[in-house]
Length: 193
Image (cartoon, rainbow, N blue to C red; front, side, top):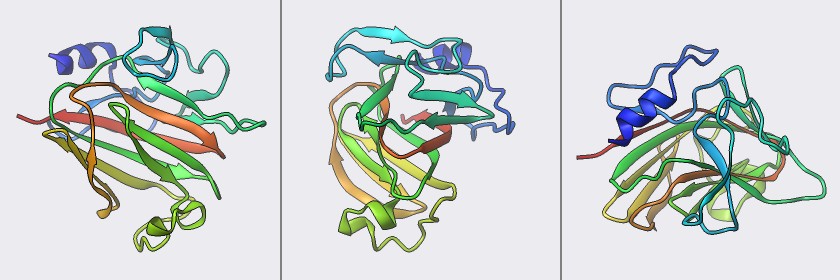
């Protein structure tokens, strides 16, 4: 059901002409923040407060879309902030996206609420991530998150980040702005049978 809704709401047309693999649906159209929002408070189960459909930037400029890239702009003084999909994801799924972190950048990908650290791994740690051999500093890296039976298995360029992250039964996908500039692209999801 959500696949049809997202396909209608989020037509592809990103500047890099990316087309998701068969069975995947894009969560980011590459042109604007349609399908993304700020939510009231810190809990993901609260009502949607501010949606960004048709807008190239969030109301405060913290997140923006340009040329196929969702950009998380740094903020001083530091303020951790999250942008969420307006859609919820109750079924098992595979989420794929690419990210590029500025030197020392620290962010996160939220999976129905729990956070997967997404950052300049070799500089911004923690230590368990500083040993990643396939991470490409200040270049595009692919994260794949497979959620099955309430557990997320997360990799970066095929290396395990989290083997068994527990996640709630449903919820949105979120991206965090914390330290430094982060860029995301090719954000897509596939429901599992």
